[in-house]
Length: 364
Image (cartoon, rainbow, N blue to C red; front, side, top):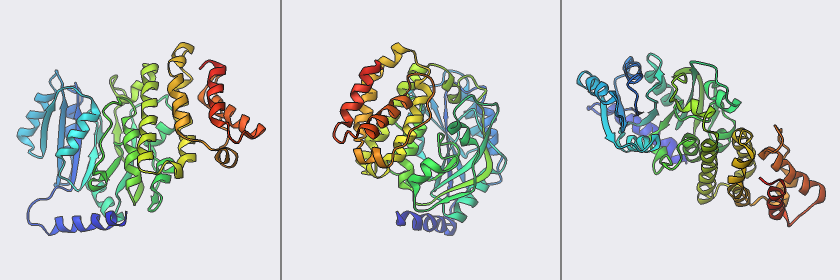
């Protein structure tokens, strides 16, 4: 980890000594059917007093006028680069953008959102000053979101520093989740990482759970930089209120992806308690809105997720706590039932069987 901290400054110093124009920040903009928004977005990215940056637009198979609008901008602003791919989704678009980025830092901006004036210079100066590998900054939405607190928190960031406990930052830092768009990433920290292309909702969280453990110095900055255009009917922020079944399916895919990734990195056991407490609320928000038939469709996968965590008797007794419940049959209720069974009756060797029986008993 220490080598990352040292390399941030060494690369920046090398850039400053070079006679050629270096790219300090690469802005990656995935574009799909964005003809109503992309001009406004690009104008905000160009309304900057900073010069050492590039704008990488990835057209994800748009059939509207998005491509022509971008190409018209390129004639006037050569810092904009355009790439086309057949429609594969935002994750594939961002991954292509990462492969084309040449900046020291990377910033993700959605095509219907904007940056405030001179935001890029402010972000660069702040990241360099505090030697941040991930700089989390503030933003605002254009309407009130009927979403959980952990989504609303993404718009309000406090001044905080996490220089040796990056995984704690993932669960505790203001603005840490769920979006990648309120973060400036040191590009080398992202080496070897990509967005999961099989996840269509929740890909940001899956990416963040893999990126944060790689960073040594994470800084939260209260400055308001980003403007989320959530009034757009196609915005990912609005899908939270639609298609509950698909939304929960993607939530489960996200959890499964993180569990698999953290096991490979050998960091799940050390952070299991924090992860479980986060996971319960992450899944439960959508789960409570499913009907009984939809819940049955996910029963086997839910059981598998709980079993993959290898919850021990000692962890249950000493560390895990009850969580607030909503409704009648929820993941919170299931989790609390597991804790109740273990803590009351002391089953030291039967936690797996308790999990399976509880799911079977309530028919979920």
